[in-house]
Length: 377
Image (cartoon, rainbow, N blue to C red; front, side):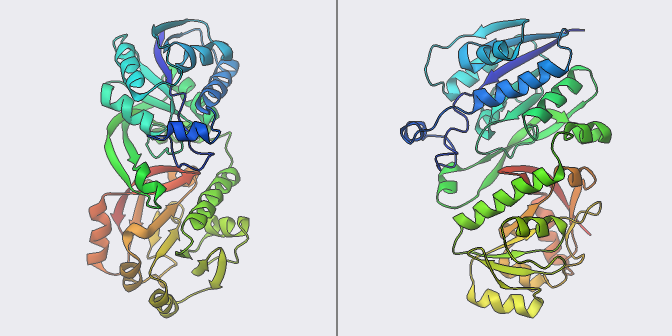
């Protein structure tokens, strides 16, 4: 049976990233002035070339947009059976183009909308289609926290193939968005925008693992290292407390920071100022450093970020740091066996505050996060 796939690209997605604008929303002219060039068309073509070269595509009918909103990328990647259903002559497309294109594509009763962009693009598509049509994103924006994105272009091609062959299921996927204005001022404020239909690869564990087969754990850890390094550069007046475990140890080593594998270390301006801290040592530091970020990684298969192997992070310590200042990081492969984040702080009131949040953002790559449910021990 022929699958009908809607495809669109947001050509300006990600243009603000390389020129340091933390996104493109509302600052396209400034990004262009700073020398930004389109990134999304390249990412889209890369993913489609992977798809067309590795998998049979005779059972797909494509519905797309003119120019760099989709047609060019499909043709250059080798696609054939396609129909342009939305035409734009604008040099730089806008969210209005995205929404209009989605409306027309949705009227073709497509089985899936494949798109290339970031969280803003996902949000614009969701505003039109809601949860009526599944979405799958090729990551190309500065912000990609929503649950509809593949890990990278190659993984997205694999997921599309599995979907077309009915080997992946459809389920809820969070549409997240980050306030770019606040982000440019140093605040990482992510909000849940809605629940869409997405491809849920962890439902079938083997398929989920195959979706990441082109991305090794070390490659992901390299991305996590870059993410944490950027956070430290951006938040120069913050003290960073690094938790225990192999993932964090790898990151510290990658960015040349002295670290204790099974301890808590303090870093300021990318220099280790204290190692293997106990509760008293941490509390003493918190008297002098009022701005703090705590970096944690869940214990594999168990999912605990607090209460297992890091009791020096006592309830008093966590309350002083603030739940909102905890950065949780993980490789996607670890999350496949860690469906929830667990806390056991030793203080039921504090545990309830975590659970009340319902979910935490877990960083799984460079500026790429996934929503994970929270449970108490």
